[in-house]
Image 1 (cartoon, rainbow, N blue to C red):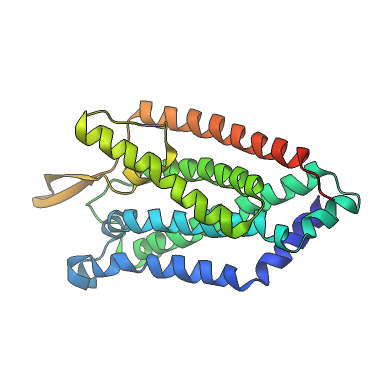
Image 2 (cartoon, rainbow, N blue to C red):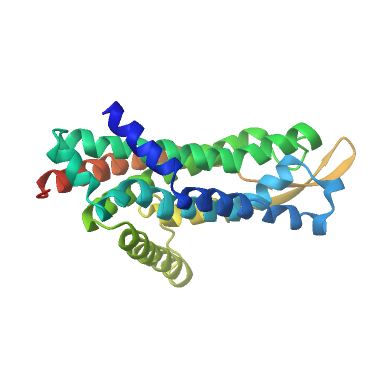
Length: 262
């Protein structure tokens, strides 16, 4: 399996799409700079940047989900490389999980680098600030990664199910909009809020819903951002992400195992 992973990594590093993905993601993370006091960097803090970056972070997830995961898992369907790997003696289990592991390494590592490095660099040069509690930032970010990991598993399943990189990216994106529309309609019309059922809806809520309150700290009036999550929400996120992610990965393997590779 190690040799397969090395081979896949070589393909990814030499694919122009990989560089496009990272350029797009980095460009998206520059947007918050222009939303902080009209681009006045003298007021910049890591806490302010993170809150402004929440919505761009949802787009970063979409970029890595629909482009990176489908590239790693679906690119070799086009030139039949994945067929040759099986026919040359590698088990379908090795071929499948080599792509699963590589997908997660590239997508999660890429997301973390693109979204966290700016936060820590700003904190280093401009300070964290008083507008956001660091522990609340950690809570929301970890939950964001858990939801992303769950949805990466779904994208892996979908890519192996449709056998095509481009089709997987387009169709899964269309499908992902359905739970968001349903969730928004139920919340608007009936006051029913869906949580943990549709991970795409949870990702959207995590990167959009931020409350504020005015506090006085050291004689200074501050607008504090409230991004903390309840213990129950975190617990159910962990459970739903692990359970559903595992189901998706196993289902993807079952589909691939039954496929005729000749």
